[in-house]
View 1 (cartoon, rainbow, N blue to C red):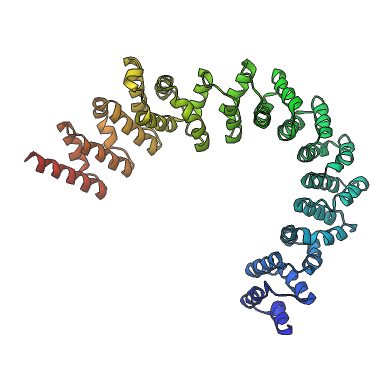
View 2: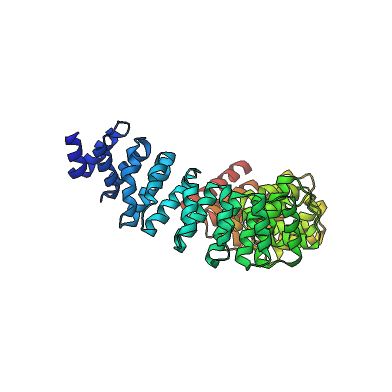
Length: 455
């Protein structure tokens, strides 16, 4: 043991790491545990990592006793690493952490309470409540509130709520903590506070109600659509959706609800978009379908939700894509990829669904994107134009030949090889002199095959 301690204290990094790895599953004496705990501040990263792994995996009850001394380290990285290990130690560390709450250093006290909250065991809850009632340091108070929320200690509600009006700084943390605890008492409290607060606190209340609300909360949230700040709409829609799913409520899509859904689809990230779509039972509203089309291609998971609904309305979708591609739509690639799928799998022929004028608008949309900055947009537009209107495609062959992306020119060769018209020979001749060998050799091969077949 003495030799091992010497290596751990004064050895080279590689020697220390080797010794630590051999000790991971061993029964360790107090001095050994103490020494290894100190190694989380070693200059060598490998040594720190090895020590951290041992202190996490080994269940020696002395580990928290010595490790907890490191939370007072001056170096933040050491403090944080000690905290991470203690959190992983879980219930094994709770008694030592509770003892350390007797410290007079508020920074250390806050850190310990944070750790206890993240462990989530209710054992220290009453002691944390005592600190909450007695300590006036703002950071310590916030740590207590957050920890009690993470522990989800219902008895702490009566201790937390009196702090609500003491300091504006406490309000968001209190709402979040109460939202995690959840109870009838919590619901009554946060719903009562809603009308008194600014947008930040209202946002937190709305999110909490979505997680813990009941039937009355659901109708309360729906009622807020009548006079809601724009910044809160997305959170409101998400919480209404969560309660709808939880209690299987019906959501009437009236004008204000519809407008909120449209705003959420247009502006929200995936979580909010999914919630908005989840509130729509029947996809008959053209404005909602149109809004979905505007976001196609931005988020794969959202696309998978809305595509079945869009496939059920092929005539409408074809017409809208024709209009959007010929305009200033920003999601050209998403629209064109959707169209490719529908042309392949839909039973409704686009040439029958669209008028001649609309078909022209669709091909105009493709030609407009043949010189788009994005090579994937250009390639997809080229493929769709070829599929929909080969004659128009031929009119733009010079543009396609000059595409700066080699893979687009190779894809062009695929289409030229497929097309048996003599009109493509000039294009093949041009590409046979391409500066890229892959392109020129492929074009030369296609020309040679044409020559053999003709003979």
